[in-house]
Length: 387
Image 1 (cartoon, rainbow, N blue to C red):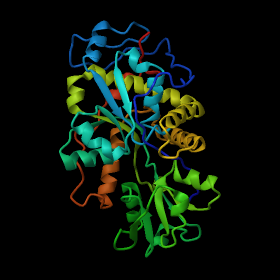
Image 2: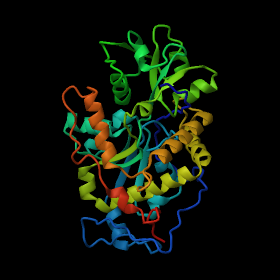
Image 3: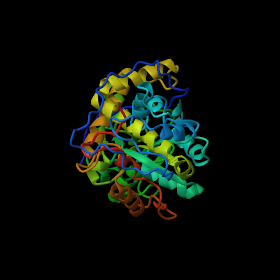
Image 4: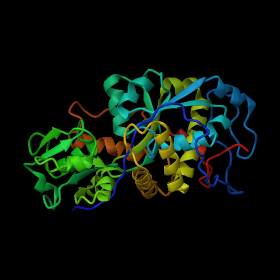
């Protein structure tokens, strides 16, 4: 089964985010009068009060948050308008971290570069590509990482194939696929489900750069993986035809748009961690409420940072709109955006293990995610926020 799709691009960014950057004029979350408006999370320090919607932010909690010092957050790819980045940009620009006595410094980076920094607690929060990525790094490096938010409960990757070469995955047997570093686990699992194993049933070759219009013109490959929110959109805007195989159509689970920390920081500064997530979730909800405005604000940061990755406003708008559609479509009805879903995370690792993605055995998932985010919403689905 094949499908045509659109997609976006994601990028890393650097320098501390200036609050003077264009604010996103989005409606603030309002609470239901009958809803539970008390923060149900419990800080380790019993002397530090929780947050009650509409009431002043407790002085003791403010002091505890300030004691955490400067909190460093690294993006996964520039100031790209994508989940796990855009919500932090929105929250910072709106002053939400300041309102909770948090001193947050934002630095553009790449996802793979963030893991050792967070593991060493040199960086406290960062953007991750998927839960399996977090769990795999943790296991391979004996790192104590923990995912705090998960925006999308589906794989963001897809396989882009030259038109007319394959009507089903089995048609890719004997071909060569291009890749940027490695095949994403969701793509490997999808191909394995069709009986296609890398090195046995198809070959792979490394591609140069990140331009899908150049990649699809490489004569010796049948296709290559990309993000549903990036490469398809670039190709469509260029008028280039292609076919797209989506792991979700083959019941391959996945996740995208994660923000994670380390247990050292989480245990030492529980209120700061909780309130960073609180402000970030508010930013996420507001970015979802008005995708064009959020993408515009993110792109202004890209431009102010010199646009080293050659992003465009059209591309970033497409990227975030695609992310929003996937986030809303995959957030369970009994949950709220950004909240990790344990069954989904476990199913992701299990499916990739069954597909042979982990030759040395699956990574441990124990302690690799937190339920913290769920406790920051009230019963009506609004982020509990002080007045």
